[in-house]
Length: 177
Image 1: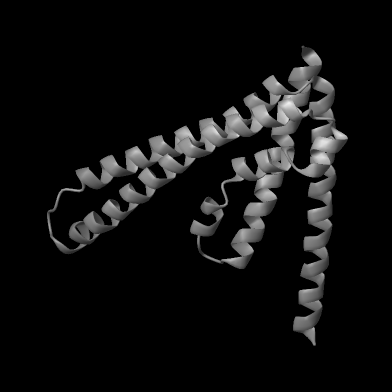
Image 2 (image 1 turned 90 degrees about the horizontal axis):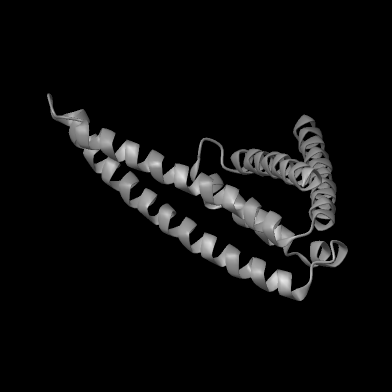
């Protein structure tokens, strides 16, 4: 049990680092914009990575486990998309109200504040679903499989970091010339 908990915590740390690395890359491509990063849905990228050919093969994830994981991830994804849709609707309403708050002296911002609170609640629910992805993995894989997945993800993350560094140096070199 202790090794399974350690495996899960390690997997979470790798996932968070991997997601942050990807977030930085998206921000570099789309400076000043938060939208592209949000659309990436890190939980799904993590889930899809677990089901990649390499992870399935090297961690010896059985076809039954893959089927169960896909089913669970699909349920989580549909809920995540629903929350995302609601966030988008509320953000559009917020923008409309913001114009009124800015242009009409004395207008009450309470509806805008309520929408902000609702968006925060929905994002919290999305974050909980991201944790649910980890729980699904923990509950469907053996401890050894989790450990192998963590190892593979670390390798992949390092490979991405090396590639990003190479491209950064190449871009800096091109700008100097």
